[in-house]
Each structure stands twice: as structure tokens, then as C-alpha cells.
Length: 447
Ligand code: SF4
Image (cartoon, rainbow, N blue to C red):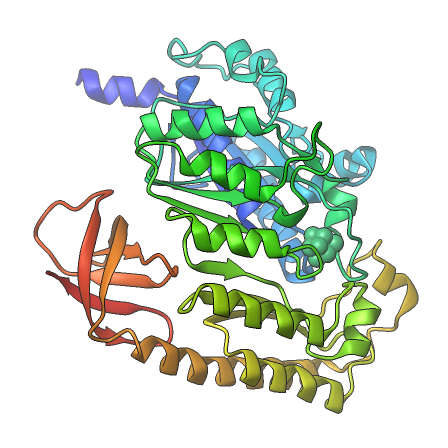
């Protein structure tokens, strides 16, 4: 009885997140703040007292989902006046007056990563049933000089995202990110190291360093440390088993970083290196700042330094004016580079970007769809072949949880592995012999 009453009086939040890993990292921190303040997570958007949408506008389809969800919440708020609705992420980087006018049922729009704005609002707008005494007062959650500092709730996942640089200075012509997240701001080395040490003390064994372009980390800090310097610092942290980082920009990824990756034991053999197009004229129109030849040299050097490394890449099909021949160049590049994973997207015109202002979105939707399907089919074939090469291997797998009755985790090369076992393997590093492979995942058994 007591338990039921206790559960009933806990205010409940639902956190809805779409978009990139940066958004996921920020949601981890928002969840940490709310838990520390006595809130309880509600997996159901319809029963939560507080709904937070962490948004992405990189593609029109993402924006449509946000508007659709806000429409649903408008109806919910009519029925439940005390429902609180908060929106953060890239959707909020536009005229706030217009946003409030269009979505009057939203209580707060706050900038991506601006936890202090959220904490101030939360303090000033307590729910009718006040939360139980916070484990940490709000001020301590935002008192750091860096508003992006970790908000800890007393626990940490086995693998945790750690933002190291916010924003982007590149202005690729199709991309809205520099307008929504602003210019690059790196977090100081000491601050990141302290955060990772704390995460490890709370249970994390792997960190994933995040940034729109991690390769420009540190250029704005005193002494201009770079990503290699940060990796060396984190390598020394006892208890930390694995370090990953993303996303890399081929224009900025340095030889020094390749050497450092190869030298450090904890840095995993996986690299996310956006290609975007296999055609030099399209790359130029995209403002990417490299050629296919440069990219090819990088891949050769990376694979020479770390044989067996897995590579993933992003690719856009149907960029304005992309001809059949230019698409075929992208297709051939995929055949040449043989990535482990390709995140392919059809070009989507985003208001405010250079591409939208300068180029007509001229490739027909059905042509884009066909190109997308061809890339997906090719990539499925390549991934099938690559993953088949894992069968019989003994792989170190960091277990992250269970799904459909099986344990799952990742290899150092970021392959998803499923394992059947009655043992409790939560958060353990286990050795698995791979028995089966598909384009998307591996399956195996414990040694
Ligand atoms: S590097 Fe280009 S695609 Fe990536 S966030 Fe910056 S502007 Fe966007």
C-alpha cells in the first residue's frame, strides 16, 4: 500500500528523443537531472506529468514527426491542464515568439544543451505534487562553469556518451547544424577527464566522445590540445576499458590521430568517417572541403595502421543536380571502400541552408528512392560478406543489456553481438565465439 502511494506521488517524466548521438547524450543528462530531482521515468507519453521532446531537424521527416507529436500533445493538454510540455534540441533554434505562437501549449522551449535554462524553469514551475526531496539541489546540478557538465544521478550506464565539442564551423551547404547549434566550442581537457573518471567510478566501462566534428576538438582552447591529446589522457584512466569517438570529418582527421588510435589499447578499432558523396563535383557543391582521392588516401592509411578496423560512413543521394553518372560514382566508391555500415539518406531541403537558397531540389523523389534502394541493397551484400568473416572468431563483447531474451553487446569494431546465456552478464566484458552472421548482427556463445 505504502509503495503504491509512493509511486503515485512521484512526478513522472517522459523523454522523447530523435536525432543524432549528441541528442541522445543530452537526453542522458536531462534524465539524470530529473532523477536527481525526484522524478520517475514514464515509458508512456500519455500518462507522464512532464513530457520533454529532444528534437532534430536535419531532415524534413524528423521535423514532421516533431510537429505530429506536438499535435498529439495539444489534445492531451486540453484534457490535462497540468501536463507540462518542454521542447529542446535543434527545433528550438528558430524565432521563439513564432514557436510560442504556433505551439501555445508548450510550456518551455530551451536551447540544446542549455541545462541551466531547464533547471531554472523546473525550479520556478514545480508540479502540483511536489517531488520528493531532491537527491541533489538544482543549483548543484548547474553550478559548473560549463553548462554542459554532466548531471549525475548516482549511476552511469556501461557505455556513456560524453560530448567534447559543441557546434560546427564547417557550413556544409546542405546542413542546418551550424545554424541550430552554433559555432564550435570545445570543453576543456581537465573537465572531460574529470567527468570520465566520475563516470568510471559510477560503473561506466566505455565512453563515446561526441561532437559534430570531433577532429576539430581543442582548436579554440588554450594551448590548442587536440583529440589525440584527449585520448592519451583518457587512456590512463584505470577501470575504463574502451574509448570511441564520432563523428569525424575527412578534411580534418589527422595523421597524428591515426597513429594515436593505433598506439592506444583502449581506443576501439572503429571509425565513423562521413563520405557524403563519391563524386568530386557534388562534394564541392556540398562544401565538404575534400576530394574522393583524399578520402581514399585516408582510408588506405587507416587500414594500414589498423588492419581489421571497421568503418562506417554517411552518404547522401539525390543532392541537387546529382546526375546518374554522379550517383554511379558514389555507388562505385561504396564498392571500393567496402564500409561495414553506411547511413544513407535522400537529400532533404532544409530552410535556411545554402543548398536550399542556391540550388533547386531537382532530383525527383522516385529517382532518389531508387538510388537509396540501390545503395541499401549493395551495402547489405557488402555487410553480409564482411560479417561472415567474423564466424569462428573469438571476440571480446561488452554486454549492454538484453533484448528478446538474449544478451547483447558490441565488439571493439562496433559489431552488435547476441549471446544466449542464463548467467547474469550485465555490464560484463565477455568472450564470445561467433557462430552466425547477418548483415546487421552476429550471434555466438560464451567460451
Ligand atoms: S561537418 Fe558539415 S554536415 Fe557535419 S555538422 Fe558540420 S556542417 Fe553539418
